[in-house]
Image (tube, each protein chain N blue to C red):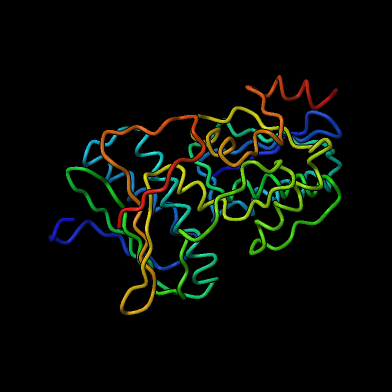
Length: 156
Length: 135
């Protein structure tokens, strides 16, 4: 990733900030000329992950969330940092797609969407405490519109 | 997000949503569904054609309204996903009572990838949905 300070949005954790988060994502992707599908995928993925932090990470308690846009020649990414108790969204299991829908436990749908719409995300505990989740998409590889899930990236 | 409610007949309500449906306002949608249910609606047409974005919170809203129509009470928003699990079990074999209208591409994608479009009928426009709602 670049060494310069990336474009960053810092918000007070709250659902009222979600619209601003989506606007930030759209603005950054428009600046680099990302296509409509890439933009829609990132908007959804970042919104779901930030919403999870607000509702489950901080669970209504005050806190801050920082969203940074990272770009390399090969990929686009958003890095989301919080100061909430440790939570690893990459450990949320995939919905068991072979189980009939009405018997399926539907928890973790936001994480499932974030995962299925991107080329992978990773999580680490920050040295200062808190979480860092980075959600990535390779440049120039449109996701299949009909594929509900795909192999997860193992890159770190 | 703007919410409008029309009552084309005594037992049908049409709730129209315009804007972005997310974690900040999905409870408003549930409240509109509750009001319609309390006002006698047995079926609710949710017009999604004006939505430019729907987060997974919107799925909680849809299922919560289905739960209300089934005479059940949604659990608290913090338990939203457990509520969805309950609803999907309770309505899976029957008429969910909720009819969806006109989702745009991004909203349709959320419905598809979550499996929700298998649980709820989706119609292209209000006229088709109302035809289904009154049969």
